[in-house]
Length: 466
Image 1: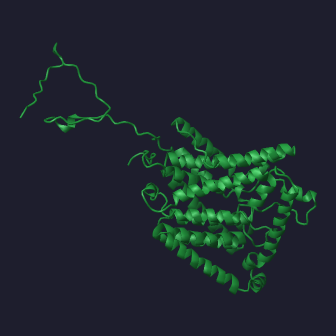
Image 2 (image 1 turned 120 degrees about the vertical axis):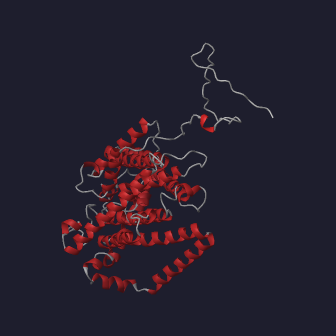
Image 3 (image 1 turned 120 degrees about the horizontal axis):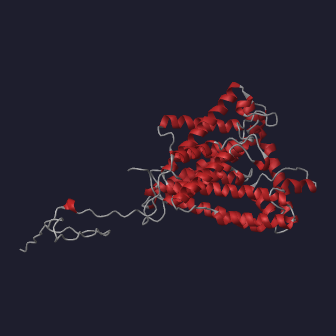
């Protein structure tokens, strides 16, 4: 047995031994040496940034809480909600640049194609005014990128955004319900044009209904509030608010979203066969409901009933006829036009020039994109939808190693797929691509997808301490 002897020399003596510099690499313990004497240098983790400051958190909360504040409207379709959004974009960009982290701009390819198509159409028709719509689209793209980048850099911001959105939606739904039940028209956002339909501060009952539908699925996905009883109360408030908006599109998208959530949830927990079984049961039940119910008499009774039914189910027949007329007029505009499109936001103007029997905006994202932005715009929309679907598939995929990193942040991600399905359905009734809360939602989805990236990469910073 060989023994290693270490001789100490006074540092003050003439033969003091030089001190060895510490190495950054891993150290190997020497037999007979105390473990506490070895102090390896810690390497900084790649991708770590400083936690979001209190001011940035407050700005993000304000931007999410301000999403319903869409009246009064200003020039260029601006609203009070845009100021906190602009501040949030600036705050996130400054925070990321200080930490030398790049700003992620998800969905850029699809939106750039849409913007290119709009610019070409504006140049072709020499209509500079239509470029204002393109500026709005660019603003919304950057807003979604700011939300995604903030969540990617500090995952605690995901909880902050989800909690802020859930509680804001609960408060807004409560105010709308109280205003409606108490007969306070200004609080419920009722106007003579919309009758008993309530819009709160959204300016449009359909827009309000879509916001509450998406908020409903976000509450279910994030499980905020955390306790079941308060969360059940929030869900009930949101459902009642959707009913009071009188938006048939919001009601249909809610039912479709719930069905999609059931199928995707079954796939995540039980596999493809269970999901197929749930889908078949839902399809059979829907077909029986459609064929066995006399919808004409049901709408007639609703039209003669109380205002909550008269202005929702009771007007379903006339509303669907109006949508059909707008659809056929839009298709006619597309076939009579050219491949370039007539220019962003010019559908109503083009219908008035014909003149058409029903002059209004397209109220359909798919028709409006083809008519106003042409074939290139249609390709851009397909690319955008495919990108969203790809990110959702990764976020809400089967439970496994990949989703373990984000499961604690969003316990039920299959409800995000339900919200996306609600947006797809709503796009057939009104133009949702310009909704601010759509891009906040898409930013959350992209941020979650970026968080669940390559497992070999170090996770982003969660909080200041573990």
